[in-house]
Structures are given as C-alpha cells and as structure tokens.
Length: 236
Image (cartoon, rainbow, N blue to C red; front, side, top):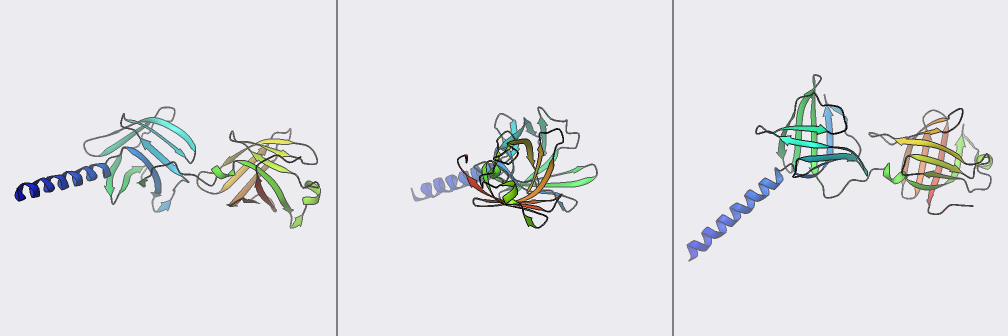
C-alpha cells in the first residue's frame, strides 16, 4: 500500500508539472509586449497587447484600442505566422517562437534587420497614459513666450478642454467662442497633436505629463505651456 501511494503521488506530480509546462509554453491567451528590439534599437510600443484564441483567431491593440483582428498558426518547427484581416500582407518570414522563464520570445529578420519581441502573459488589457487623457479638463494657467496670458484667453476662469473618445476635441468658454478640432496621440512617446477645424487650421504639438488629476502640456512648436485639472462637469 505504501508503495502504491508513493507511485500515485509521483504520477500526479509528474502530470501537474507536465500540465504547467504545457500551459507556460502555450501561445493561447492574452500577452503584453514588453520589448521590441531591432538592431539594438528599442522600438517598444506603449501598452501593446496581443490575444491568441484557441480557434486560431487573434486580435491586438494598444491600451483600450483594439485595431487588429486576424488569424494565427504555429508550425511543427515553432514558426508563428500571423494574418491581419484588414491590414497589409506580411511578406517577412514567420517568427521563430520560444518560451523562457514565463516569457514568449519571437525572432525573425525584417528587411535585413534582426527583430526580437518579448511578451509576458497578462490577465487584463493594459492602460496607457493616452487613455487617461480622455475627459474634461479645466484650464489653470496658459503661458506663452514666458508670459502668463490666462487673463486674456481665460478671463472668466472657466475655459475647458474636452477630449472625446472619438478623437475630437472642444475648447469651451474661450473669448471667441467654442472651438473644435481633432487630436491624436503617439504610439511610442507621450505626445499629443491637435488640429483645429477652421479655414486656417491651427496645428499644435505637445509633450504631455499626467499626474493624478493634473495635466501639463508643453508645446514642441512654440513657447507655450498649459496646465489643466480634471473636472467631471461642465462649467458655465
């Protein structure tokens, strides 16, 4: 009986280890891209994720935005092929896939350049700093050419910036009335670009820093700095 119990425990332990190894080496699930390296150059995107489903479909995105759907397959020699239903055909060779210390590592050559992608499992979609820009912001100060112009542009202290989910924006309670435009964020750095809807469009490019409820915009094409605070209702 003692020998029998020992044998059963050994089999169970072996089975568990085999199962864990299989799970660790299984591409299925949600993955976060931790690093993208090309010729020792860091090209890691912000909050990039990929989801591989058991039915050989896949999707990917950045932060809260899903922008790719398609399919995936892995050959007997651990070569990963990806297709993008609405994208451009990938003419590069398949990725060589390996698993190491809980990470999934892809390697291949693109146009003569060696590429390495490192991914880690995750159980939820990542949130990027760009996702946190959405919403309503109250202007605290506006500095242009080292001068505070808040009294001119925001005399009633109720000017607001509304960054909408559809990548349009509204500037409300400005002396010349409400202004509208579109904005976009960058996939690799904390950059906010804004273009106004007008006969003479105004282009504004900012680096941004977000801490708690405070947003600081520093222009890259002029000497302008704007500080704002998040609010949750429109000001009159």
